Image (tube, rainbow, N blue to C red; front, top):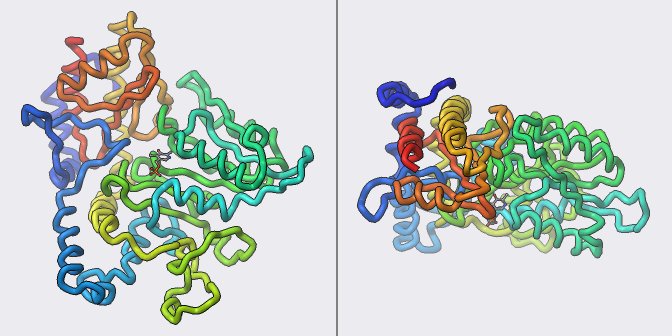
Length: 429
Ligand SMILES: *Cc1c(COP(=O)(O)O)cnc(C)c1O
C-alpha cells in the first residue's frame, strides 16, 4: 500500500465496508484509567474477552449449583461429554479431521505429552544415532525448557541432541530456508522437528509443507507449536502431513488467561501402539470408561491423549470464542489481516524513515506469506521510550527485551482506524 499518510475518510470507509467490522462489537473493550478505550495491539499475547463469556460461565456455575454431580449428565452441555464440543470448531481452525484434535490441558503440558509419545531417541552414543530435536533459535522459553528436559529425561545431553537453527537477519529472506538446509544436513540423526509455526518474537510464519517434506524425507517427525499460529494464519495440518501439534487458546483464540490448550495427532499415527504415550482415564474408550476396567483401551484418535475429565469452567469461554472464529472463517480473517498488517507496516516504515536516529528496523518478514498479523519493530535507541510514549497515548503494545515492540492488529476485533491512531500518535514522537 503506497501511502505516506493515511486519509481519515478512506479509513472510515474501509471500516464501514469491512465484512468483519461488526465482530469488534462482540468483545469487551479494555479501557485506560481515564475511561478512554485502548487501541489494543496485544491480541498476540492475550486476546480480548468475548461478551458472551460471563453468560456461558453462568450456565455452568448454575448447573453446578443446581444439579451438582448430576451436571455430568444433565443441563445444556452435560460435562461428561463436554470436550466433544470442540472437535468440529478445532478441526476447521487447524485444518484437521475431527478425530485428530482435542481440547484440554495447557500448552506446555501438551508439548510434553506429545514429545513423550513421539520423541523416542536412540540413546546409543554413536554418530548415526537418531536422537536430535531441531527447533528454531530464539524460541519461546517454555518450549526451550521443555525440549532440554525431554532430552535429559532420556538420559541424553541437550548440548548434543538439541539443534537450534538461527533465522535470517534480513527480513527480505525466506525464514524457512535455513531450517530446510539443517534438516537435510542432520539426515538420519534427526528425530523430531519441533517448530513454532509462527515465531513469537519476529512473527515469521514458516513454510510448513516444505518443512514436513524435508523432515519426512530423512525419516524424522514434525511437531508444531501453534501458539502464535492458531487463529492467526490458515493451517492445513492434515493435508500437510504434520505429525502432531499443540497450541494455547488465550492468544489469537480469545479464550481467557490459562484457557484450555489444543492437541493434534495425525490420523496416520492413530492405530500405532509403539508410541510412548502417557495415559489417563479420560483417554480410555468412552463406552467402557465407567466400567473402570483395569487395562487401558484407547479412545479413537487424539482423544486417547486426554488425561483428565474436562476443565469445564475454562472450556465454557473457549466454546464462545471458537464459535466467533468459526463464524468469521479463516479465509475472511486472513484477507483482512493481510490488509491491516500491510497498512501498519507502511506506517512503521514511514516512521522509521523519519527517525533515522532511532536506528530501528522491522524484524518481521516483508513477504506477507511469511508472516501472520504481528509486526515486531526493533529499535537500537530509545525503544522503551517509544513503547512508553505509545502507552501514554492510548496504544497498548508489547515490549520484549532488548529493544523490540510487538504489535498485532487482530482482524477479528481490530479496525483500520486503530492503524490510523498509531500513525497519529507516532507523528508527534
Ligand atoms: C504463549 C506461549 C507459550 C506459553 O505456554 P503455556 O504453557 O500456555 O503457559 C508456550 N510456547 C509458545 C511458543 C508460546 O507462544
